[in-house]
Length: 313
Image 1 (cartoon, one colour):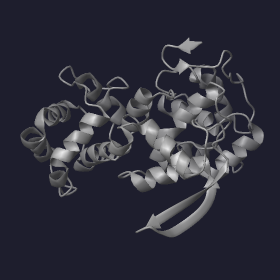
Image 2 (cartoon, rainbow, N blue to C red):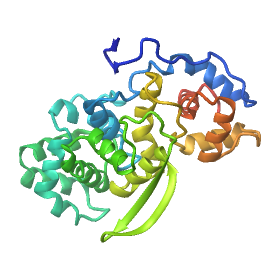
Image 3 (cartoon, rainbow, N blue to C red):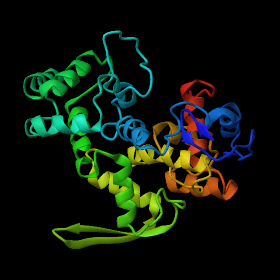
């Protein structure tokens, strides 16, 4: 069976309970409102293909700055502000390989740009020294109706170039990291299996730590890519793991994007029962629902707050 949006899936993909009981009435309400359709929402899951992992996971997942609306800029989600003059990177054919080439043309100049450098100066550099691809990126930046900064542009291009040795494929990068960690199957079936992360400096091991595979991958994302923090590392691989779980190709996992919305919700409605931090929440959730990723609860919370189902005042 093939889902046209998501690729090959199990004949009977996983389903979710319509209602839950957690002791937090607001979380139960958010689940009841959004969980039944959450596994079929476009843009929530990232299929296990090179194209989807590049566009939706890597570029659209904002592997650089959290406030930059990367998914809209890249073109994997619709614009939230109607701007006919804006053409997304995907429509322009500016994928990982093209962005990597731009970095090799002008990266040495852009890397020296200060945080407060005006975006128009970066646009000028791209127009004059970035070739046809750089000019196209400059045009996209000029017309993008949301916030952008020098850090966003540096991160976008620098991170794309980090995939050069992996055929400009984020999926191949993930596969290589799993192999480095001693995981032979890819995609992994068990993202919670323990692995050993060794960090080296000038070929000397300076850190060796045992942790679950999902944490190891997140740690390596934060270590290897520019301006990636815990929230973004969870976002980038979390929806890929969710697709694998839905398709019955992976077991339950613990990672989810713990952000300000999630924290504020739990502080307001957790009643001192629900832990207000990532590891504690994941452990609490999996104790109640050992076969359901806490990523789904987090998404229900986000939707309930952003769509004003629950009043946070």
